[in-house]
Amino acid sequence: MRRYLPIATVALLLTYVAGCGDSGADPLSQPVNVDIPSEFVVGSTTWKKADTKERADTDCLTRFFASHKELAGSPELEGEPHLFRSGTRDRRFYWLQTSTMGPKWSCVAYENGMFTLTDGTGSPFTG
Image (cartoon, rainbow, N blue to C red):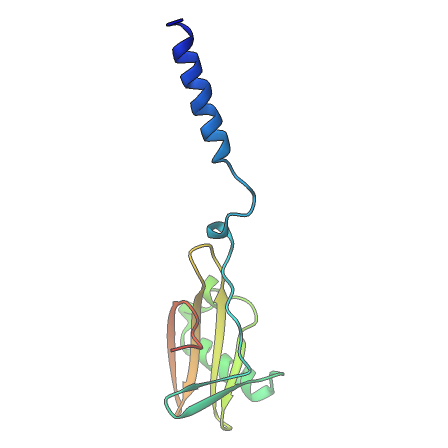
């Protein structure tokens, strides 16, 4: 009987471990997406999502990368950004990456004649 006690214990542990296996729907392993709003407000400024990119938008982003050559080809600024405008000159370009750790974003903003680059986690559109 003593011989079967360790085997029974091992069988019980294996059954327990098998029950804790991958169910294929672990919510912690699913990427978290960011909802893209049609507009959002920062301070007293309303930013509206642009449906299309205009030549002025492309020129603006080209000027940014021309003055920040070290950022060209950066994985954080890869692909087509989400474009938001406020007024006729101010623009924000957002690149979003999803991961199991939560969304990450980078933003090139052109406001009041100056460029800024910011990044963070979570949604950049909510306070």
